[in-house]
Image (tube, rainbow, N blue to C red; front, side, top):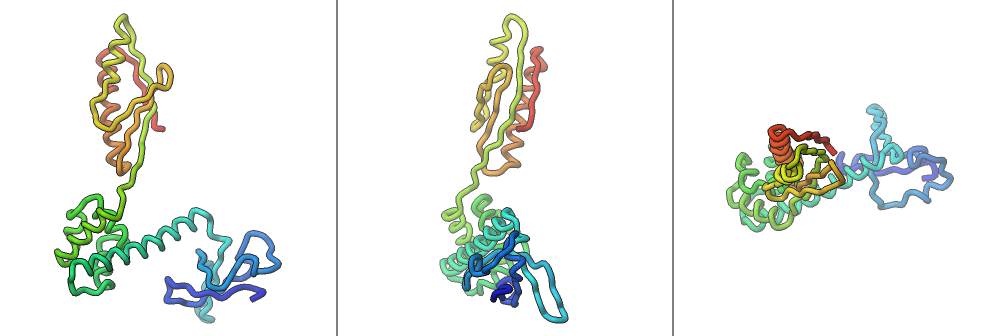
Length: 232
């Protein structure tokens, strides 16, 4: 309509919402059709509810880009989770309704897709406390590992190291000899270095990196070297 648009909110049982023209964009709009079209799906924010009139007012302009991105990703993941669960039930040949299985999974996880993500990383242990048929859980783990790629992240630290004395160069080489697999060392210009590690989750990657730095620090203290690290 010239003054706004009526829309359905699928997350609330297709409840009708109203989007006033002033809530479409942060600037004045002459023709609402320049911004909205029938049948399109938008991320909106509910900003007012009148229970007596049964009216829900929504806004597009009050949704920032980060909120929009997160919401679209959440909706997409819900679809992925539902499809993966459906395929798992079919492959396992068990008699359980997808909705019932979803409800059981959501007793332990925020959503079905998150459950599959954990299954791809942890395997059977991610589903051990979920009350689902064993055959179904087996298929869920297999499908998760086939379809969900493990996340790849990189953590790094900057540190400085100075070793004194006539054999300072040799001491420095020994201090920088790293045996941990997957840890990379880069020279940034004396006396700074960058140590980095590629992993699948921040917590374990940072813990491993901190352990390596502690070894370097301990070696430096024993050999009269100056050591200082900073979180990048």
